[in-house]
Image (cartoon, rainbow, N blue to C red; front, side, top):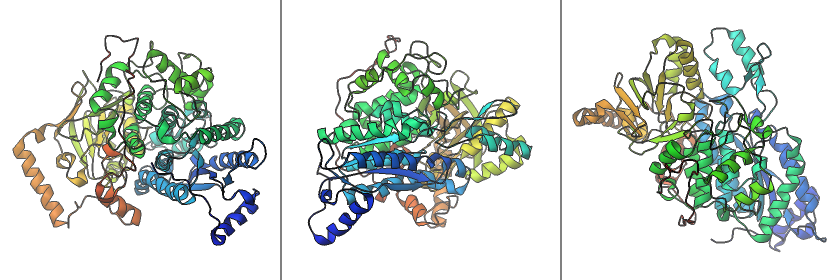
Length: 621
């Protein structure tokens, strides 16, 4: 791979602003011709991002104090901190602006690509918050491939209802959206999210921060502490500079760390924490940026993913949204390193993978003195919280891409003998469903399978997540003692619970089978065969007739189905024309052809994954 470090040459025009910058930020102008280092952060319009700037400034100050030409100092050029921008998932869920959320991952990647490549940073420390910007940040660092390290900004503390003492959070607020008392709705809204930090449950943010830690790009003990933990602007900042200096001295780059087995480690931990379905969207993007174009062929097949989740990897955490506790509770019992230790000891992770601390994963866990599972917040592999992993991907005639994803850890009912059989209730977009839940909630019946389509990467465009409707459905089901499932070509928040299936592909906008479902069709989700089927579409004549009608609607509307969302901005237009399927990461690539910088082979290490507590179930793929 060609070097991506850029040096300021001796041209007076190019040197003058570099000299001026060095003087303005208080560093030695004589160092402007040395390799550059700097700090980056992610920002946006929510509490998730409020703590980022303080951490960035603390790390920048630590770097500045270490840079110079004296004994033991770092002879480097320091650049000022830079920030990316993203929307707020928590504020925008259930609105059309939510289409910008996943696109924000791409915007973060683009912004950091410009900064890292044009500035040519030889070393980078990133502070990340919310859901999508951390993945876009990691992707940019992998593509730039110079020494770098990430720190989570940290989760928010859960709220407390002062009237009941009940622990509440953002998901609690979404779940009361259909409550008839406006004062109660406002009461919960006022107390659900005190302070600042990213969503505190095992939602997408903490799923992906744990992923980034286990894949090796963030020190494990920096994942779980809350955003307002003083360590994040104190000792953690100093540690990060030490680690970056070590990475630069030894020329350890992101692609040395993020390899086939470290990606597999991270996915297995995501299963074990009952993590968000979004991991199956983001893991392919991270793998792509690391040089592997097709996660599901090169890193882990759907067959292996499902077998591991069903038979080998249990859920170890009693965590929100399916359990009781938040990430700050996990920190209080020892942090993410406790979970990693349990999985390492059981034989489920390859402990020889290199990490950003310069150590292997196993050595990092040992140095941190990781505790044993407490058995209340974090459970052991031998005696887990749930016997099976939290995620399952589905094929069948509705998901020929084998892309449909179910968060099994969050299912609260409806699976009899691992089978759900329901009646299709079709909605041409999320807003129609929200209107029905608002105005006619009584029309939803036991074993309805709600279909929300034309909300995929190209159709929406932007593949919004659906925390608002799923939360309302969860409340409706709990109140009435029924099961209502939901299936969509869009995606879900990590805070969604219930029998919800997302990422169904190909998406409706591109003519996928989900577009051919009609009201009242029988839909079968079978976890014994890992299939999602529409019974009517098994009849070739019915399918051909419906396909012809869909093709005519597209032709009559100038090549795009009339039920697709309006792409009325430059970004949405870009997504409409370039979004790739969820199985390939859902990113934006010209002509929908996934681009990989410097592709490489997914070399096997020889490590064989085994659960020593389930020897009869172990299987080699």
